[in-house]
Each structure stands twice: as C-alpha cells, then as structure tokens.
Image 1 (tube, rainbow, N blue to C red):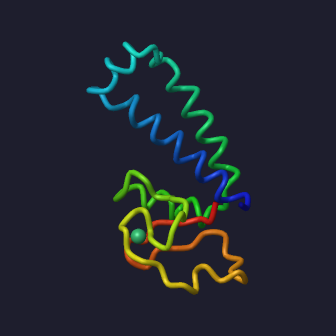
Image 2 (image 1 turned 60 degrees about the vertical axis):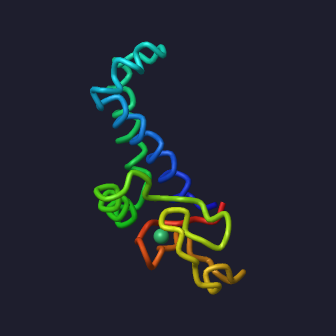
Length: 114
Ligand SMILES: [Zn+2]
C-alpha cells in the first residue's frame, strides 16, 4: 500500500472519531464509556497534521466524498465495491495496475487494494 492511501485511511478513522464526539447524542454515551471529550482538540490537531501529508488533489476528493458518505475510502476485498456493492470491472484487478486509489465508477468512493 502506498503512502497516500495509508494516510487517508488514518484520516478517515480520525474523522469518524471526531464526528462521533461532536455528535451530541453520542457525547454522553462516550463519556460513560470512559472517553474524555477533552480529547477532541488533540484529535483535530492530529487530523490537520495528517492532512498535510496527503497530496491536495486526493485530500480534496476525500473531503468531497465525505459530504455524501460517512465512509469514503474502502479496501477491496472481493470483486465488489463495499460502498455500493456494484461489481468492479476485472481490469481493476490487473497485476499491472499501479494506480494507488481506484475510483468506483458507480458511487465514486475511493478503493484501495489492501
Ligand atoms: Zn461503489
């Protein structure tokens, strides 16, 4: 796995954590589970540091996707996009494919080969 996808996956994990903390209905539950809401600042700092490591074009695409989807980047584990469950063209799996991130033609999510 190349650099951008690795950072992007970590960024998405952080975004999910941040949005769960920000979600008020979750806040109390998280606190009961032992998560301190004061960690939000640290998470956001880590997020911006991580974002600097990702090429702007890819980050931009990710940001746009997250407006529509909670999960914007997914691993390919079979022959389907795990976002929309549409079968991917076999050309995606050619051993000569050197593209780091594949775009699902149906939903536009970014896919990577783990
Ligand atoms: Zn898809």
